[in-house]
Image (cartoon, rainbow, N blue to C red):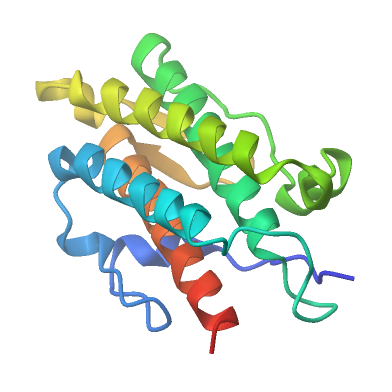
Length: 175
């Protein structure tokens, strides 16, 4: 059983992550689209190397396939959230239980080739969306139900840390 992660990860916006090393505080928002594309390609390389597969390394750690499904869904979820921020005034985001999604959507039983294609498409959609953000649109806001508030520029940096961090998680499985 995966123990749900209940940490508030918004601290990654102010300092480097001690685990994966990514420092969202030094990342410019207009760099995120390129980082998303690089991240997508890194997942694609893992797939080509045969590293995206079912089978948890232990009962408390997602499989590489589950991590890949999660990253795909991060890109999908944040595309929706950024779209809301750009089109509505200070929207409240729908809650997302990532662990429940993994079970409900049967991440462990999805087809890796399909997942990687969907990840590529979702990453490109959010990267293209971010490419079009200019000027004051970077400061448009949105909120989570836990009270965390984001601007487009902070949610973009928050999102890319998540996807970079999960590449690090997968690399830990190969050790």
